[in-house]
Length: 231
Image (tube, rainbow, N blue to C red; front, side, top):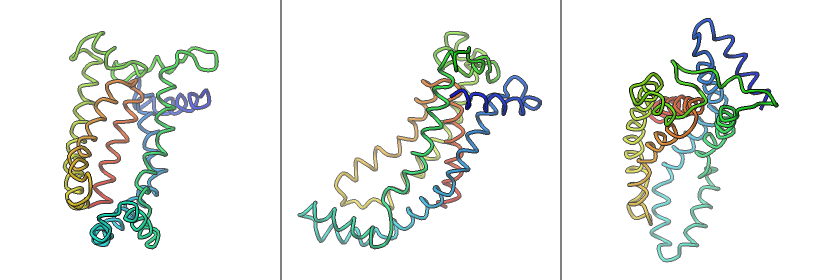
């Protein structure tokens, strides 16, 4: 933890001439971009896997018709088909799972009053007047929605909402094409999954601002990446 705190402070020091008091916030954005760049090859592999799974849908639909009365046999047949075509049904989860340690590291870093027995100096940093270690409720208590810190969150919520709407439309269109109507529970999946994009708003509201910056940056990266890899 103390090593990571030192790295963030050093990166903030390098960015200070450009971003001044918001250098630590800029360091978090740069750190997030670096993490996403590291997992980008996996994102490309996940995109190839998604296209391969989409190509298998007619054969999967045929298996569903063939084994409609035997769910266990259907499951084995679908898994065998994926294995035969060397397509992993879980490949799309890897990029998200590998980012979780970075998110929780930032969350813990900016939620701790002490690091290595010393006061956490990073908590003194902020973004345009909004402390990186505080949450939206703190911003509301300090100055309300239009206070100095409150406005920072208004901007973040606006950005996240725009990205969520973009993801909602793309997810809804993708599900309409990829999930056969005769799939058990398909209707429920198609209705619920697009709205998961808006859960990011809740995350931004409840985590420290530093972790919220990570979430917003990563979500924006994902939207751009998805548009490029899934045209």
